[in-house]
Amino acid sequence: MIASQRRPVSRRLARIALAARAHGSGRGPCAAEPEAIEASLERIERESRRLDALVGEVLTLARLDSGVDDEAPQPTDLAALLATVVDDARFEGETTGVAVSCVAPETLPMRARADDLLRVFDNVVRNALRFAPAGSTVDIALKVSADGNAPL
Image (cartoon, rainbow, N blue to C red; front, top):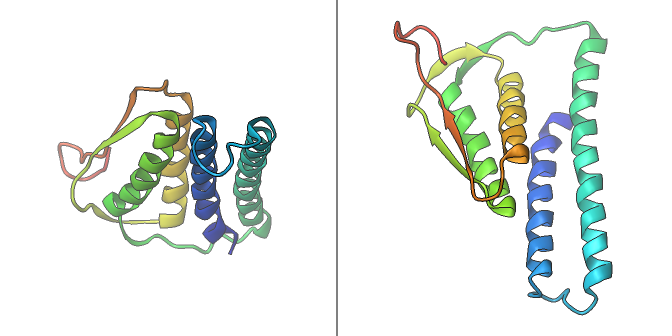
């Protein structure tokens, strides 16, 4: 259940940031009390980021604490997992003026633990967005090794 809530929290963060930008431009219904509303939106964004980090930590601790790692690799499409993260990253990048490009095969089937890979992709891409300067592009590439046996 917690895992299913992490991605919606990330999307809410992006929407809050977009609302803050719209407010900062003087557009929308919140223009009447700009300082108070801006401070509230910034606080909501900060607290939402903390909540997102906490959910991730709880997931990791719960799995480690259980001592049971019975999730076997399942057939999954690595390219589809990455596409999900890229779609969210493009939405989030709009809030900071960072573009996201992705070059990947249409499909890349493999056996893996999809939830773990999704978290890894999400963490790496979100960190790239966090540290990318406005007006830049985060380039993502998923390739197959020359022998065709491993994703790069």
